[in-house]
Amino acid sequence: MSYWHARNALFDLITTLRRATDLTPDEQARSFVVGFSAALLLVDAARFLRETVESRPVVKRKLNEPSPAFGIPAGVYDTIQKSLLSARHNWHLYHATQYFDQHQAVLDATAAGTDLAILMSVIRRLRHRLDVPLRQFAVAQLRTKGRQWGSRLKYTLFGRAMYGLQKLAGTLVADRYLRLGHQPALPSSIAKEFREMLQPGDVLVVRKEYALTNYFLPGYWPHAALFLGTTAALRRLDGVDQETLKPHWARLDEISSGGDIVMESMRDGVRLRPLSSPFGSDSIVVMRPQLAPREVSLALTRCLSHQGKPYDFNFDFSRSDRLVCTEVIYRAFDGIGAMKLPLIHRAGRPSLSGDDLIDMAVASQSFDTVAVYAPAFSDEIATGMAAQKLISQARGTELPQ
Image 1 (spheres, rainbow, N blue to C red):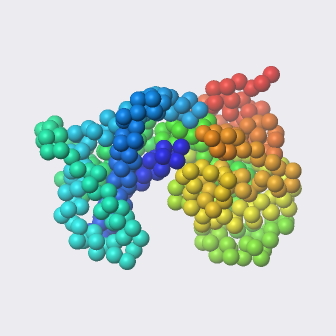
Image 2: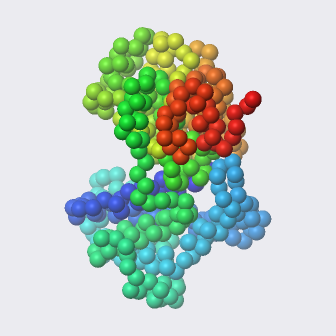
Image 3: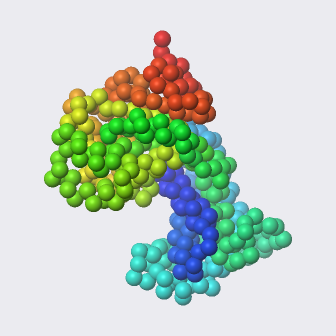
């Protein structure tokens, strides 16, 4: 699970960097260092798999088996290795290595004294992972010569370098599942309706179509965030521990700017974010904890104590020094009042998925379902029994009689 999730995050990072345009020379250097180190980590992981598994047919067969519980299709190991050994993909990466070799002095100067220095050490440590036999490279050159890059940056060395990074990274994450260019977001009218119904303490469980995380996280609803509201609303909540929240008010005010905020764990860690972050999704379920106002205040105070922690790529709920998205909900509410959020064992460890939270709301255990929007099945916001039916429809299940 941690491999698949980290791999998706690295690819997402490379794709985001490649989409950036009109960069200054310094911004180009910084973007390349981040993108090149990310690609090298992907290549190194794929080669490690090959070195460890290729001579072990039983293990290889197991890794090629589908895993329906996590949405993993059959043949994933073979797909990754085919991409890794592709002469054409290595030809694409040639431009990245060429850019690095020609601009190494500039890259070193840009990275010196910054966090990028760590990434430069990653590049130096893993640079040999891109070495390709001359014959393989020659074949790739012949296959690729004369082809269009399909990017308006295609005539610059930097553009070709970033394209090459994305090309390899995309295939290493089985990019047949990704639709580039898709921009998930709730329609403005739908977002407005949800804003009017949200209350501090509400849990937002969302889905982005075509996101790679959909294909290895269990269930239809893979991501969650905790709604805090505005700082003014938080100050008015009954039972809020003002002294505990004192260190957080400046950050709350900065992020809020008078608007609504959430606590959300993403690849860059557990952070306070504007409501537009979870609203940048295609589908959403709003759930409300079955707690008294003072208990909600206690949960939100507890939640804020986790601000700034890193993301947990190992999905380990036994530790609280790093958290996944649903663990923010778990750490906030479990044990508050009568609320108990049971963990379910998956892949040998206890976990809590977005679908697990929704199961609780559907059963009216600890949470109530407030509203659902799933445009793949309905163009309108559903509440009450209609919301329950829409959730079941999205999962491809039926409500119990």
